[in-house]
Image: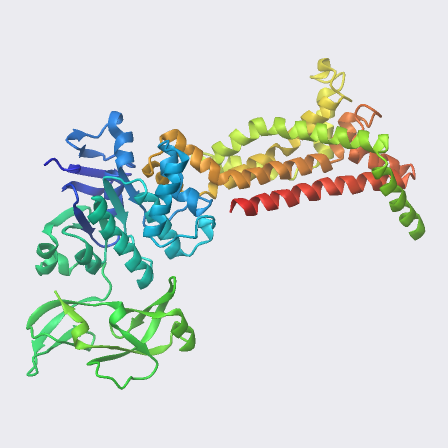
Length: 353
Length: 231
């Protein structure tokens, strides 16, 4: 079967710097492909080229067997829709935002109304039609953006970090909507993400992009579960550490991360390992908790960033850990930069690659 | 003096509501002259503002700096320059424009050009750069994408036009120097207020001031409402 979109040796140069180098990939019907890579790897540029928004400086983009050029660029743009990482909304109502793409395609008003309703239902924004999109929260705006792309029923949906700034609840709404769109509407999806867990949850295939080059590609399992040295050096994911592991008699492992920091993992492993700890698996407190958590680390908050309903904290415990708390507990615990806190997490939350 | 003011205001309100011909005449002429001047200025200032605000070219900062500086041009200064150009012996004297409504229109149009250009450019600059890519990926053609950007800037642009009209209708220097305050021909709100006050005819002055203030307030209010509606 001909793929929907193929890239062949695509290069992209900005002012003499090579952002993408000889990138080749195929997106087939109903495919769910994740493009994983740290910030600055070229993911956004890659998606923009696939969406027909930017032209490559070298190589070929092929849409359904035909090279993309002047005569079919408009068609590609209409069939491959991108949702940007930084959510942008038109300065108008939610309804008009979602209806925009249908309007430029010349759909009649009653069809537009039906489709917009359906799309808003999918992202759980029914009742928001007349609200000003600019005044919605970040998570709601991102859902508007997803509905606005989804309503066009594109063959290919290109999502750039669709959940990077969202709280867990909105993240799951967005992830569900993506999965639904793919399963029941047959839309092929490409997700650029630095969240490996999201990639594993939603996607079937993955490419790993580092410094503008595809360094790994294959099924999600092949790319993520193979402990490749490239993967280990990949720093875009939160709380990724490398360390030396030695098994204990209890069947767990103690892993030295450097800086006098040791964490315990629930599996037995020896040698050099790469581990992740999901921010949502870490409990933050101001005094050491009496709990069964095997890992309790003390440190100082070095950075606070405010998301929708949660607050993301960077805590220096010898290495920098990213953790999250709800806005309410953030206030109640009176946390701020410089506050001393304890991080607790179970040995089973330490995931080894 | 206090009773004079109270009496003046009372008589002024009477003049307004009885539709005094002098009041009506000056009001309508002011609206016509400043309205035309705003439309005229908009024809060249809007494209210029859009160009400056959306393009990136060499010397952009200098151009913006010049228009910014021109925002503060004193009306009498501009009036004097145009007077010299338009007077019979001046280089544009052949057109015999001095002391006609057209002279005031031209003068006010020049006066408010920097306002429209500057505000319009900053409205364009405040549009998020991703809007164009967004329109494109939603299926817009290049032309439709540019239109989407313009639509985002529309509230700011409307504000620029209203602000410039307010400046035009409220200025005195140009109307006085180029119009000459000729009754029934070039007499507008501001010039009549100035003249009647020096003559000691306060009630007419007060009546016209009330009208002038009302026009400015109503327009500002309407623009603010419109802005809220849009965003």
